[in-house]
Length: 205
Image (cartoon, rainbow, N blue to C red; front, side):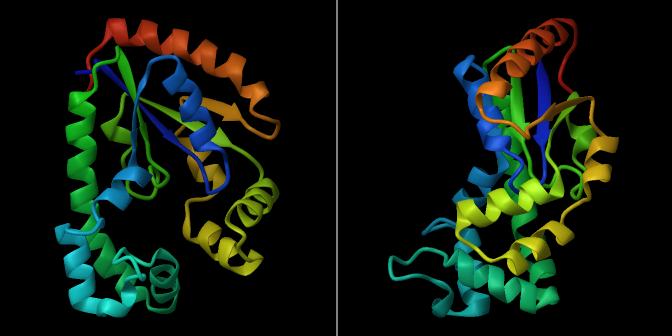
């Protein structure tokens, strides 16, 4: 089990995955809440069966997998559906995060959680690293990445914690307005710091 857990977060389009990929190259175990969120609604899971029971088979795509785009549209149109999904999925996701964190074997591990602030998970980690960009950069990158529209991405950003709220809980901040190459030195510096902190403490998870 890792002795030290670093929670990594940032708004949509901030570049969290790029940052955590760099830590992974240094041998750090990464627990990614986005990956877990997909796993708990994969075909054959309790999560997916309950969603189908509530919304019908039309929520599935032609391969029998969850149609995430359609579900996202439904959630934005029906606030009560978002509350129901959160009640269903959050316990499943949190259970998997705890299990994977406890199974991590690197001296410290990273728990990548987009909604670290919103779900009050900062106290569940030893240190918080925020990947920060301007809201204009968030919007531009996400529209290009997801081939989506400005209105939908703006709605997602409004539903997330504000940039100020994220920075308020940060122990460390990576500014990611540049390219991936700009991140390498900063990640290496933090890797050294977290290794030292891990040797001095025990995880609270």
